Image (cartoon, rainbow, N blue to C red):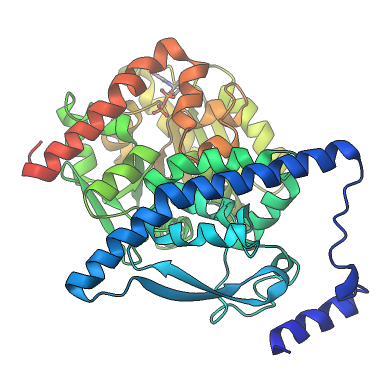
Length: 442
Ligand code: UDP
């Protein structure tokens, strides 16, 4: 018996479980039983369809390729199968995700894999304990939540957390839903391991780093008292630079610009510089609050409509008991007449991190114009973030963000304001990226 399985069984014995009662998945009621039967039939039918549409054509094309180039049709991979047993897989020897994995549909019919399930764990490199022995009992799925999340590059939890998340929410025909959600994920997915540290779109350089590295960078700047403007750009911002040259220059000059949004993910893929992680202010704020709370940095909330920043302050302080919010102010004031007074308030409050939520490009212009007289060492433009955190506007549910459809949600919430930004803006942005790729001029 394999040592890993022995290790798993010892682990389970310690928890009072025996291998025999490991699978106690007998349906509790007839309805659930029928749903499971229906799902099993759908899974088999879909696998047969996928074998006909993807597996056989890929096999045919790669066999012809082997005849001409001698390149192998398959590459081998060993993963943990159900019950932590080693499972040897033959993947097609190509880079693109779908053709590469299309050889696996046959294993759904042989019941070694599920069409949708927990994510794959490499048998050779993942230790059974770090792979989480409980998770390793489940049959891995060709499509899994971890694959979908990593395709959209949102800063999500670890692989184990994502699998638990999947198992907790799994009910009825939810696996079919996940299968549908994987369609946009296939569009965004890339297998590239080497990432450039910068993504250059229209001459604006964005830092291509992970969320944890971005927080380290901010922490370092605060420790060094190195005054740093921090901006986020999404496709809408990059469309704006075509009509607002001041905004364009500001983004070009600035050193810390983070890529935000699924459109940037697609653009990065088109330009051969795939995105490592989607970095947006809304996902970054909890990390900033934890950093500020643990190191005693004070945050000032400047922007949004009347009382929005105050509501956000109350909500943040409920969640982060030791967080110091040095002040709040709405964002509708006359810069010429009132900026001095606003800045002196921010400075007198001893602010370390200033969040400016005026929307782009106003917030970037404000920070560039007044940044020198503001003492806060991190000055960050955060767009509509206060509206989300004060619950004035609901943010898209996690599953929509995971598949890169947050913009669809925002469009549904505020169609009048957003239709131009998304319906016209998104295709226009991708067209401009294509033109930029061809001749590198704006
Ligand atoms: N806003 C502001 N002052 C202004 C104009 C706008 O504080 O002069 C606020 C507005 O209330 C909203 C945010 O700026 O909270 C802009 O949100 P939007 O969703 O447009 O920003 P995005 O995230 O798209 O840049």
